[in-house]
Length: 128
Image (cartoon, rainbow, N blue to C red):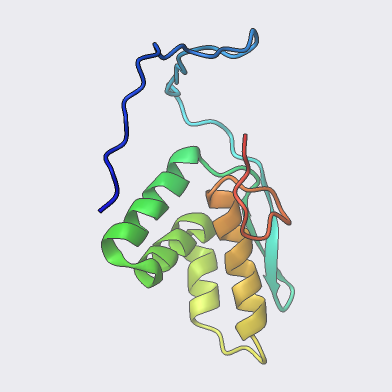
């Protein structure tokens, strides 16, 4: 059995950079902001768009659902939230040729954005 860790007698100091606040203060929006969108995928010649920037709380809700319901149900929920009903139904109700790899790529893009990662982050979280 490992020995218990010794407690430090040194006082813990806050380390602060001059340009960083000690407390983060969030403000809610009084009205929904206009959402800028961009194309994510096409089915034949029909374009489907998603928001350029996803809300931070979407990623938090997604992570909670993974923990509570499992990854598959959380992934389904995330797709519905980001793609809108129209985009989700378009993907769900089509029969595609050789679509598994493309669908996985599409989901990876959505998941990275929901978790606040930049494109090309390949599974690594941003460190601020």
